[in-house]
Image (cartoon, rainbow, N blue to C red; front, side, top):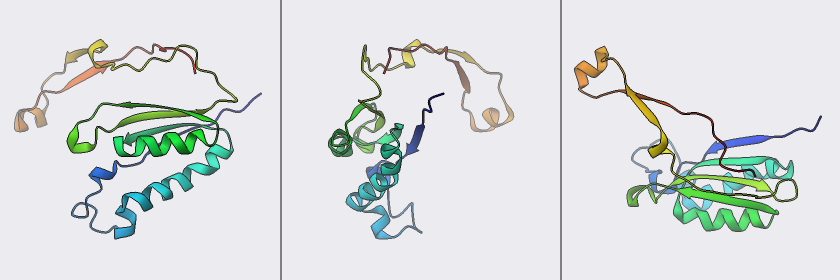
Length: 146
């Protein structure tokens, strides 16, 4: 049986790495260039193992760096950004080794408009704070193959 490794990592968008919020973090830990290199160093063993890598909070400013680094390791990198100016249009990305997988029908879509939501009964917290809670029923529908 062949092994398939999938790694997921929330990298914290650099634009959201505020010193005022991450008060116990050193300046080096919040510096975007140093953080990128540290993150890349953490990913390298998984790349060496030919894992599929899923990233969250990928900011627009790092998309090119990730693309170039993954490309130099024969990986295909597919980002999908959905944020706004305040969070550097952050989004998600997937990277996979091109010698193991082939893109056949790649589509990048926003699934929000396709999700059916139903109101949930008011809870104690929603009565106090006045927010409406909903939940989503999301059917698993693959949008193509790697």
